[in-house]
Every structure is written in structure tokens, then in C-alpha cells.
Length: 515
Image (cartoon, rainbow, N blue to C red; front, side, top):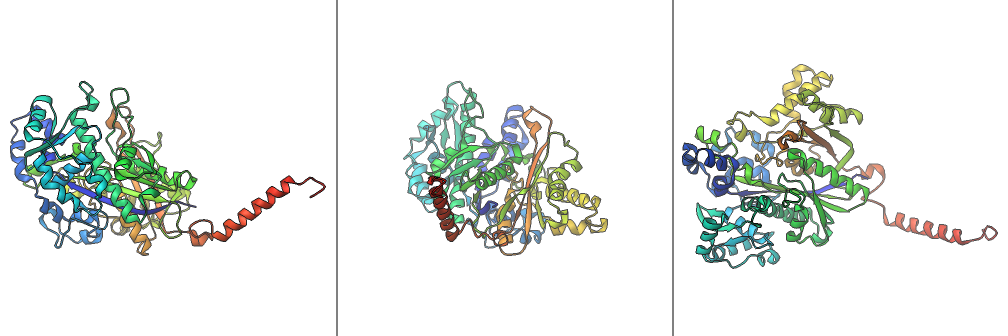
């Protein structure tokens, strides 16, 4: 039987100071043009936490608004606050920067994070109010150090500063004297990924209604990679995050595939569960500090807020078939092969049309497609256009070519089978997976019958190949009732199988004459 999606979580962390100090657009500008007008103007374009919470796409991401509601909001969305916006949503939350810095401390097991004791005292009680933060995490937060000691580490030893309202409140030290893979910058980046992913794991366990002890395997699919000079990306975020989240029965490993990583990981998770290797697997991905303010120059130039001010994280729980939850259908998998080529039509054919044809389906048999779900409020001012719509137009054009729709139906196709983008431009985060949570609900409610999740990636960024990448899979309603199975083998069937096995064993002990 197919494995199922039991639940999903989506988390944002508002980190405006990290936009200034850690986003690569800003750190690069600080090197090549330290007197840049952009760097001088950027602080005035940073949003407050309250503004980030009221931002419509952010509320959709954490589950306080639907994609359909967002479609009815006039663009640009940043000009329209969502009424009754809340920090907490049904999928997760938008955590403020100060509390997240304590999460970074809680995820530090090698004593590289040093926080100002006054800051810790002021902030710890706030974090304790978070519904998924328990005493096991709070106990990991140290009392802190004198601010002068923190300042000396930043000034004299190259530690990466941690700031709130551009005031130093802590730092991340380097973890090795000469290993660039353990530099302060990389340790900061990796700890931010780890802390945001841990938050996603905690919400996923809670919202899926499972126990932490139920989780047997964790797969991390972020774009960062941890390791040292002898195995640069060979480390394991997954198990490190499971440790902090209290998943005591879990092991795990990391999957990397640039933006397509989450979809690769979902297919792996579904395969492991269906094969019986593990009963409950969580796929998780944390935030990417490098991409904070990635398009900031364009936003500032156009007088906009710097909208890329949040780290994004997610987690999806995959379990054995329970007879109810939406299934991941491993018989409908798309893959961009080595020989596919990078022409857009070839890419979409390999990820959409080919797997559906192999299953005897048309493109129009899929209710919703979820490709790259980047927020157009962010990408259009930067000249990248509306990425989801571009994908839907290509899928629709392919449907016309295949004879599944008439050319005049193309516009209606993008509306009927498409979605507006709402995900932060955090690399791997937008690529298909933001819709898994809503698709889970829409399938259970009968609003749709299926959805295709499409992950696409740019392998050429690693300078190892010019190849493009992509995989896809289909989610549909549970078929256990149709196949006569209800969440697995029934108790009576188990008893029957045991009785038969005992009879067979007894018969094997008889001689031919006794038999």
C-alpha cells in the first residue's frame, strides 16, 4: 500500500538584522562597495515584526489564510495588511528574531554561541510561552555572558554578531582556527538552518497528532551542508535536529538537490515507508540566511519594503497507510533525466506529461499543480516575473499540444489547475512543498481529488554540471477502501496468518508417513 501524508508544518522567522548582516547580497555589497547608497538606505526599508505578521503571503504560509483568499487581494500585496493576522497558524508560526536567537543557543552543542545575559533574562520567558517549546529546550539555554565579552569576541576574534534592532546581543564563534567550513559565518548559517528546522519538526509532530517517539527516520533537504575540511558537506543535519526536537527513536540523513531537494526527499520518505523500512518518516528543511534580502536592491530601488526578511522552514510527516490520509502515489513519478535537456518544453514534459501518460492519465486529470511557488510580490519587481504563472502557462501549452484542451481554454487552465505563489524565496522552500499542507486538507475535504508536487533545481550552481534537475510525484485520496484494506492488515487477518503459519510449521515437522 502507498504511504500517506499525515501532516505538515510551515514556519517563518522574522530576521531583519540578519538581512543586514548575513544575506549574501548585503555581505557582498559590503566588500565590493562599502559606501553603497543601497547599504545606507536598506535599514529604512526593513519591516517591523508586526508588519511581517500582517503580510498576506506570510499568513497563507502558516495557514491563517487560504490561497484562494490571497488571489482576491489586489497586488502588490505588501500594501494591504491582513486583518486579524496572528503569529500562530494551523501549520506553524512566525517567530520573532529575539526568541529565535535563543533557539540558536538551544541548538548549539559545541559552545560556539555566546549571548548577553541581560538579553537572555529579558527574552527567555517570551520563548517559554511558545506552545511547542518545552522544558527540554529551555533547559539548553545558558544564562549568558557579560556583553563586553561578547563584544570582544566579535571585534577581536571574528565572531559573527547576533543583533536585535542593530544592537549586539550575542555572537557565534568559529568552531576551528583554520577550517573555513567551521568558520563563524558558516556556523551561524548552519545553526540558523538547524534552529528553524527544529521548530518545523516540533510543529509537524504536534499537528500530525503523533508522539515524538513514533518518528523513526528524519530526512533533511535544506540547501546548506555541514561538515569540516575532510568532508565538506558530509555532515548530518537530520539527526542533529532530531536530537534537539526530542525524537529519541529517530535516526536520519540528509538529501541535497538544490531547489528540488524537498521533492527528492519526499519520494525517498514515501519509498522507505512503503518498503517497510520505517513506519514514520519526517522530511524537513530549515531556513537559508544567505538568501535574506537576495533581491533587496530591486526592492529598495522601487521604494518597497525589503520583503525577503524571513527564514522559512517546513516539515512533512509520512507514515504507513492509515486508511484515511492522502497517499503519495509512487507509480506516478516524474523525473528529469540526464538525457532530457534543459529546454522548458522538455523539462515540463518529463515532470508532468510523461509520468501521467505512463499512468494512463491526461494533464487535465490533475486538479492542482504545485511547481515553484515563489511569491510574485518579491520576484516581479526584481525582473523575474511571476514564476508560478510561467510554469502554469508551460503546463497549459503542453496540454494544448497533447490535445487535452483547446488553445482557447489555456487561460482557464491556469486558473483551474494553478495557484498564486506565496512562498518566501528561500531556495528549496518554494519548490512544490508549500502546497502539501493545503493539498492534504483539500483532498480530505473533497475539494480536490489529487495534486502534483513538482520540484525543480539548478544543479549548475555547484559548477559540477550544466544539467537542470527535477522530480515530481502525485498525491491523491486514500484508496484503502477500494483495495479492501483499511489502514493495513486487520486483526482477524493477522490471526489467520499466524494460525496458517503455525499449521505450516507443524506440517513441516511431520514425516511423510505421518502426513
